[in-house]
Length: 302
Ligand SMILES: NC(=O)c1ccc[n+]([C@@H]2O[C@H](COP(=O)([O-])OP(=O)(O)OC[C@H]3O[C@@H](n4cnc5c(N)ncnc54)[C@H](OP(=O)(O)O)[C@@H]3O)[C@@H](O)[C@H]2O)c1
Image (cartoon, rainbow, N blue to C red; front, side, top):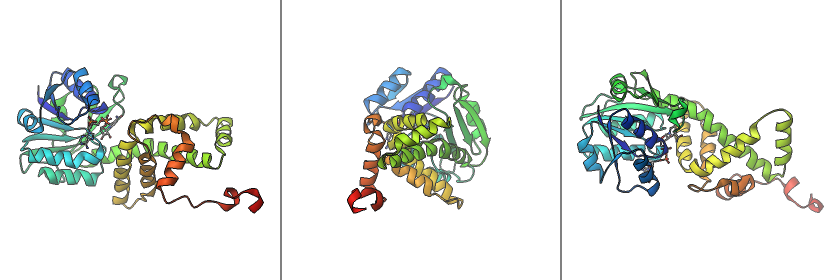
């Protein structure tokens, strides 16, 4: 049994923390600064709340970071400043280059994750959603301490898989997986927004349906999901783009995907917005609305 801290119990963090607690570990979280939604999730899975980070780092052997990707380095930095000594597992959707940044901040070796300042660093990537009962979610680990960490945590769900002993490979796998799953959602949102602007959305959907292509439903679902999580997906798309660029693979697609997701307000009902509303928002914030005189101008002036 280990003492574990989870930063922070979001949808995914609470699911993982609850599983660790159920496996017999003592799991804590930091109450201060978090929203009512996070407090509710932590209470639902019976986590032990502590007032601040200083208290948490003094009481746990393992820290698990599960937060929005754009906050991963900042969270690690606060943990180091707080004087933590132990094992730090970053399970965020971040680029291998960001993993190296986290290693530097923690004073750990950027290739293996071994400690030189008292913090052993393990890279992690979560593939699958917070519904752990579905049995499809994996926590993939890499780095020299990945094996012992997997043995220590020992939970069935999420399934814990050790990839190899190199820091960054678990995150690279997560980046590749999300590049397709979330990237394709962003592509569909862009397609429907563009089609709406030319008033050909219905005609497009009819052609998909005639060919048995289920893209219309997928796009509707992508719109609803983007309303809830787009604010967080934008950062993840930036991390994916950086991962592509770091190996010379063109990164423009996921930079555009980040722009699409960034158009959503946090926790909005995007079905009210619709694809035409999305297009108007994108056009207002982007530099891409160049117009098409043949279509935009009134018929008498064409
Ligand atoms: N949800 C999924 O299906 C899923 C699947 C695979 C991987 N993941 C990964 O898990 C991580 C978190 O996802 P999630 O679904 O748990 O997100 P979430 O439900 O949005 O929760 C994020 C948590 O982080 C906290 N937070 C927000 N802004 C922060 C900041 N600037 N600094 C530190 N903490 C902050 C939130 O606290 P407050 O809102 O209370 O302030 C909340 O507790 C991401 O890296 C994501 O890629 C998620």
